[in-house]
Length: 499
Image (cartoon, rainbow, N blue to C red; front, side, top):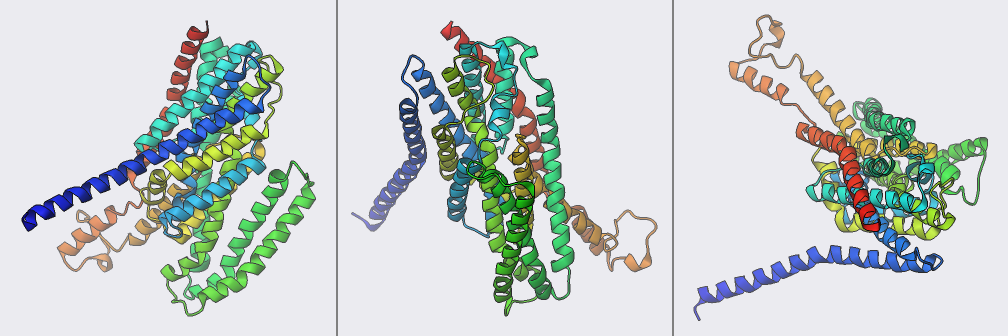
């Protein structure tokens, strides 16, 4: 056999091994997800009193687990995107951190928004038990299918949008438009508009403060030694107050003053602990923005973990809210659910499913949020993550199912648009448009070629990719009606089968 023939055979074998390996990796994630759904079904069958409706709970558990996987794959990607996009943490590290804190947030602090999602969207007194169960089942399945499709095409949609649209769509199909609690829907819809705006403003404001206090100073190192511990203190204080009021509410309910004191104490601890760390890290550091930005790397990772905790507390309701309503309705025997009971096993299915969905299917959208919207470094990513975390924590404390997708992506847009505004403002006067008639002689370019190059450079300073703005906005707009339509059709199909 000639050498060239042998080389060709070896290349074929190598290609076959590579294809087999890639196929195995592609099948591993769906296989693990399928095992999780089977475990959720078995767990549900042993967690409820055996009876004629046990199979309904089992089916509901499978759908809830499927929805939790999709929440993890789509929504959670927005939390770790800035950290990965700024290169502060690797993809594997981000998946590990998010999985732990998502599960912790869901198990420790989840449940506040469940009643809003599962009970307050519809006037459930209009339904009997079987109809109410079918409404929630159709809503959960429709929202899961829509989020799965969005994840497949790489669109970071809101799972909150999907769930709310699903509940409203199946409710209308069951009892008409009058069954929808429109004031609640209006309040939630307004929060969808306000959330990205607040997230963007908060992130841009925080970035402006860091620029004025650190990066625009002549002595950036000395300024960072003063201000970085202050930002760490704000982060630790906010997290401590939230954990005291919500995360530990099942075992301890402190009053307002106690909570405020805890926030101050932990903020002081964060400041004290970070002071020597920042000083040590800044020793022998060059007085440049790029080097000073590395001081925000560890705070960024902590703030991203905080955002994951907040997301687990807030958005676990999207996965298990309708399922918790199904379990409660079957246990009470009527469709008017006055108070949703949230068993631990239901909460655990949501928590584990979210973490697993992130680990198996999340990397693609993490890259979209962290790398493809605007360029992020550690400082910009820190501003986006911390401002989004604070907004989500406040929303969860108020029991409002805001979209963490809107908040997180809005924060990324906020820092990007602020940088774009500052960049274009600073370049005004340095480049004269080629078609200008009356100009200041001091602003004239040396040659026509310089004028043309500077004009094009100024016009091209778009630091936020516009096609991502438009595509993400379109996905947000389409999600509610698409999920509602799909849910209504699924309800009609279930009703036809059951009837």
